[in-house]
Image (tube, rainbow, N blue to C red; front, top):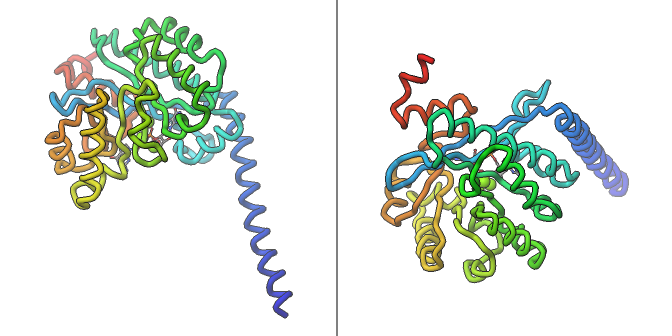
Length: 288
Ligand code: C2E
Ligand code: MG
Ligand code: MG
Ligand code: MG
């Protein structure tokens, strides 16, 4: 009887596994089609100077416009995209489109200081012509290297130290800044940061989100900012949601911030309106 029960249980588990596998396979099939048909779009989240309150640029965040399911968020498809290697064409598309869009805004607003920050997957860092490709994309869009920031995660640094280091150095030699995303969630410690050419730490939102309610989070944020400053590295706080968090970050002299308190990631048209508003050109834009 126990054996029968065990078997039945195994069967249920099996069915669940089966449907999970089917779902993943379907996702992969859909994703391949999405790459062919270019079903992606970018939402832009402002990055704000905590000193001047001005938008200095945007982070490009990919979305998938699925024909039946509607807008699909990256947390759902990036893992499969990375496993299948589809992240490479998707990532290059994001880079091209984000650079094209930034150049359009720079021209519209005569504002060549605006920057765009793009997330780079570890798969890109094993592409042999990465830096040439990126230089080409910048050239095609008449952008300067300092207009583009590339975000990598701590896990990338942990993967294959020597070849990753070489790739990162090539990008730095082009004049592109490297930003370490989701800082604090990985295995990395501040002590090895000097081994890599990192310009900015982006403190993960899980710490920023709780810094006004949990003392320990505030302490972590304070420590990260202080040590980063000692290493000559700037800090961007992710996921700012309340004015209290903003106030604390200002006191800690955190340079830049991002989060729903300022704006959620928005479509290009809304991002354009945010730039226009900041430049006091809102009237001008809506009448044109
Ligand atoms: P990320 O690079 O850390 O991006 C920040 C994420 O936090 C975004 O989620 C953004 O919508 C969310 N966020 C920003 N402010 C707040 C806030 O105040 N509160 C809360 N709760 N969330 C906030 P999103 O757009 O869903 O992207 C998730 C992750 O997917 C990104 O995390 C990034 O790792 C990855 N991703 C997005 N676009 C790309 C891409 O083009 N290429 C690659 N390789 N990865 C991407
Ligand atoms: Mg990011
Ligand atoms: Mg992040
Ligand atoms: Mg993240």
